Length: 205
Image (cartoon, rainbow, N blue to C red; front, side, top):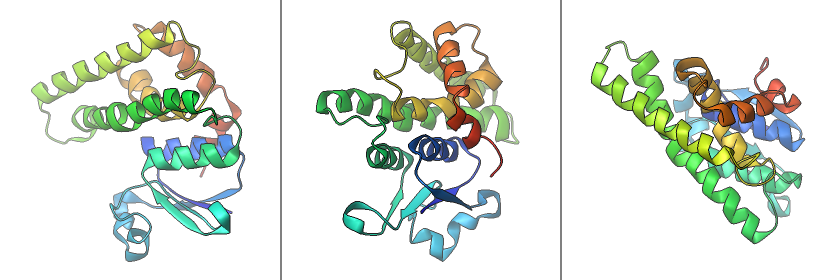
């Protein structure tokens, strides 16, 4: 059974959505980052950068036990292992998934987290930073909306690329910015939100 080290962040929800979609057996190991549990020595051996999520699979490739940190790597691993189409086998289709998976992991979430910090969590209000990151987030939402005008999902069929985009679209696009100006993204968001695996992933833990 997979151990998923989880907390209720955008990246945490990505990993939980992926493992729910995979159908693989797993259990949650809660890492409360507000209590700095991510700095525990045992956890640092799994996630050296003291971030969540992380994953331990005692039945990894070749039957070896493996541990993984970094959300994109976790999504790719779960997609490959599940063989449910979340990460395709065709090399050309994989490249299409990869570019959106990496955009979601490296660009979209990274900048959305900065927006969330200045917009919500920073006790000191910095108007210039709020304005900057609001404009950045709106630009990225526009990028996603334009792509989805001619695509049902980001990379063909539903995949880990979509999972990499959903939590920040939900947390900041829906709840903070609103998606009225992004109808294609709204359609996509609502389709992902309705999936049973999404509902389970965002449910009790």
